[in-house]
Amino acid sequence: MRSESKHKNWNEVKTNDSWAIFKIMGEFVNGYEKLSRIGPCVSIFGSARTKPDHPYYKLAESIAKKITEHGYGVITGGGPGIMEAGNKGAHLAGGTSVGLNIALPFEQHDNPYIDGDKSIDFDYFFVRKVMFVKYSQGFVVMPGGFGTLDEFFEAFTLIQTHKIERFPLILVGTEFWSGLMDWIKNTLLEQNNNISPEDLDLVHVVDTEDEVLNILNEFYNKFNLSPNF
Image (tube, rainbow, N blue to C red; front, side, top):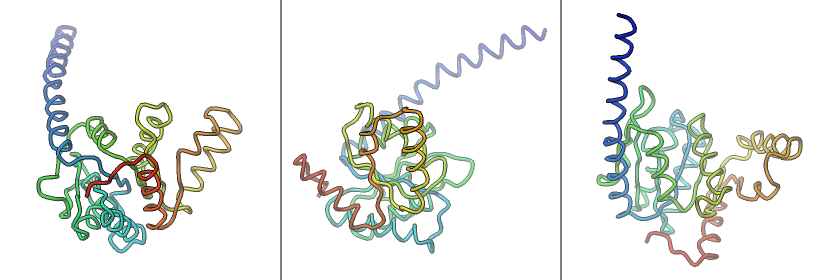
C-alpha cells in the first residue's frame, strides 16, 4: 500500500510540474509585454530591511532621483527598504519607476512609489531575474543580504561570460563592499586563480550619487546610447 501511495503521489507531482510550465510561460509573457513598452532602465538592488532613516536608504533615494533627472528609468524589486528608496527617488523626480515584485512569506510588499502600470508580480525568482537582466542597462547594487548578493553575482557572471553586454555594475558603499572585493581579489584570484585579473575591472565601487551618474553617463556616451527620456 505504501508503495502504491508513493507512486500515486509522484504522478500527481509530475502532473503539477507539467501545468506549472504554463504559469511560468505566463509570467514571462506578461513581463516581456510590459517591460518592452517601458524600455531599458537602471536596476537598483539592495536590502528590503533598510529603514527610511538609514543613510543607505537616503543615499539610494538620492541616487535614483539624480539618475532619473538625467533620463534614466529605474527598476527595483518593488518592495520596502532600498527598493522603496529607489522607486521613491525616481517617483519624486517624475521619472520611470518600475517594480518587479516577488511573492515571499516575509519582507516583501509593494511600495507606494511604483508607477501604476509599471508594477509586475512574480511567483518565480528565476523569471524575475531574467526581467532584471533583459531590461537593465546598468546595475546599481546597494548594501543588502543574500538576495542582493544573488542579484549582484548573477549580473557579474553574465557579464563575465559575455551572455549579456558589459553594462555598468556599480557597488555603492566602499565600507560595506570592501571585504567582499578583497576576498574576491585575494582568495579567488591570487590564491586560487579561479577568476581572471580583468574580471575585477567589471565592477566599480563608489560612495556617491555623482560617481554613479558619471559611470552611467560615460558608458552611454562611449557606446552612443540614449537613456529613456
